Length: 449
Ligand SMILES: Cc1cc2nc3c(=O)[nH]c(=O)nc-3n(C[C@H](O)[C@H](O)[C@H](O)COP(=O)(O)OP(=O)(O)OC[C@H]3O[C@@H](n4cnc5c(N)ncnc54)[C@H](O)[C@@H]3O)c2cc1C
Image (cartoon, rainbow, N blue to C red; front, side, top):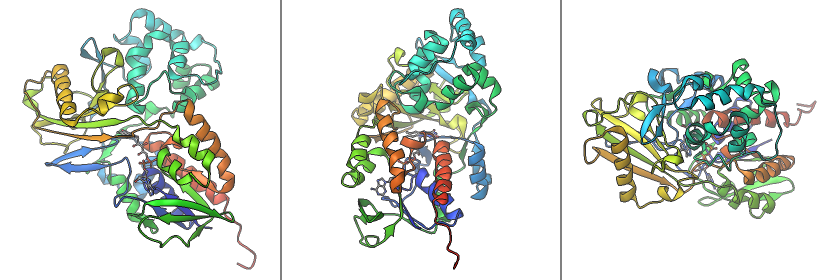
């Protein structure tokens, strides 16, 4: 049995790694020379810049992988103050509570809203089809939590619009807690394994350390091979690449797409047109990542936390910023500070596609106003624009998930963030589970063997 995996982002890499551990032959194809997909770290003018994720939740799964890859010495946890996030309210930043229970003593909410949050324990569970995140929070916690907590957090994780994302797809744990304990608050109290239990980490040389370390272990990784077409012959898959005919004759028993939905749709156009059409409907809003460096002495804000979230009610330009140099050492010179700002996502799409110079200027102006920055321009600034950023778990993704489940009968599997969940640790967990699922399909050895 041989498996073809297309795409060496974290999903494809992790799957190849776990298949290799199980002794299952595979070929992993990646269009770029570098692996990691969305996870990309660059060095520019001496600054260490992240173009994708800035930190990872250090879940038990990830801890085990880090140990196996012998990366423990490279891991850096976020600085102590890193669990504080700030939300923009009436033009200045207020500290958000660090846990759901701290919400009750936090000034972001009125007394009425705090009381309503407490009453969540008595709201009976309900199973509502296609309930959005906004509807779920409004039903359980009341409307007071939406603007300044739910909205900015959903923007921070999905770059998404909570009035469109489906709660059971985007935050399945919340629905599980409601069903199991009758209340999210009760669930958080009882559940040990909540998202709040894990530290956030990066690596000394940045996030790309992780995909690079996995790639080094792989024996059948082929980079610089853009897969152009997939065909199927008598139940086997054949892969055609743009630059070489090397793999045209290889037949695979199983195919795993570890690709964003749009390139996956192109590949499935002829073989599985229904699935291809469903994939084309998955929305990826554009996003721009802007890095700005200032002299510390020019910034009056203490920058004592993870960074900022901007609710749309404040009509901001950026969706928020990470205070990268407050979180991790070695991102810029000690006398400087580095901001990583996110512009775009579902609710600020047009801002992400603004002309580069204008975009940089708008980000600088907003940072200056909100952080008490006295200088006219940053010491360094750069922008990386993405036409397609994070898949939206809205109504349209339902179809693709449904069809993906059916195609497993044909030996076609998905390991990608539009199926696994968008966080890096979800992609790794999903890849590990998929490797075990594939292992179960391995034919039993014949008696002669
Ligand atoms: C700006 C941004 C910030 C983020 N921040 C965080 C964060 O802080 N924490 C967190 O946990 N997650 C974060 N995420 C989410 C996380 O980075 C992604 O969900 C995850 O990296 C997706 O991995 P993937 O392997 O599923 O897909 P991808 O990373 O998209 O990888 C797909 C790979 O397929 C390759 N490919 C495409 N077409 C072909 C083809 N035809 N042939 C061969 N190869 C092909 C691509 O080159 C790519 O390498 C962020 C995402 C973005 C965009």
